[in-house]
Length: 100
Image (cartoon, rainbow, N blue to C red):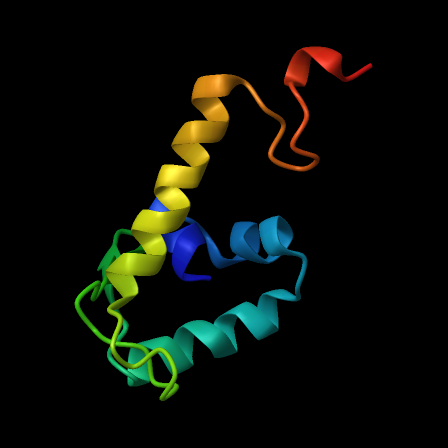
């Protein structure tokens, strides 16, 4: 959820649900939980929401409590940049040119 919002702060929850393969209602519940926990804020822009992540907020679970959310977002952003740079298909790790 955090990664989808980091990629597109104006993404519709319906699109998040479709992208990650869960129901829109589940996405709404997760966003509500993230908002209540201080991981994100929502601003109304016309008929849409714009989300702002609190990247300095630390994870809740004790094994990850030392790390801010920023670490996760930056890790995946770097991974996605590498995938794009070398032309791999993120789904299977093979070069995109090898797909039929």
